[in-house]
Image (cartoon, rainbow, N blue to C red):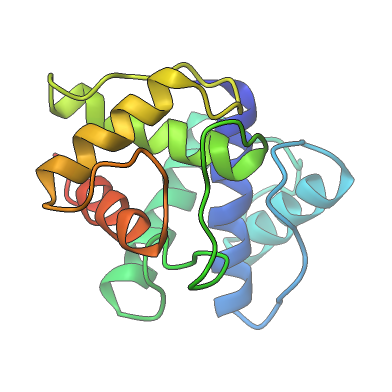
Length: 164
């Protein structure tokens, strides 16, 4: 997994956990492990009764994922529930973190479904990303236009959250 996407996932998990515990806005998922992320890690460690190093090792990552899963199972948060707005469409040629997130999701789905092309994590909405989206759209009975609108996003989230 690309380091920036891993940091983004860490930040997203910490944001949801800390918000659920009454500390919204401590960290914003941007894929950069800066001072805010270090502080969010320390807050989580403190809440869990752990040494407050601000560093994330495999054991801490697993604990963060466990706490996030608990919140999801309790129905306190929904996995990947957001999309910019109903009229937003992400199309080939776009770039940025949302494109990287979609590419990461497509990479994971591609591991499960051999017919889905696996784009590289370039943060650029390239031809491979567009083709992978088309395949997913066809699988879900949507118009295979290669662009990500709310319906396509919801389908991606559904597939991603039900991977083994």
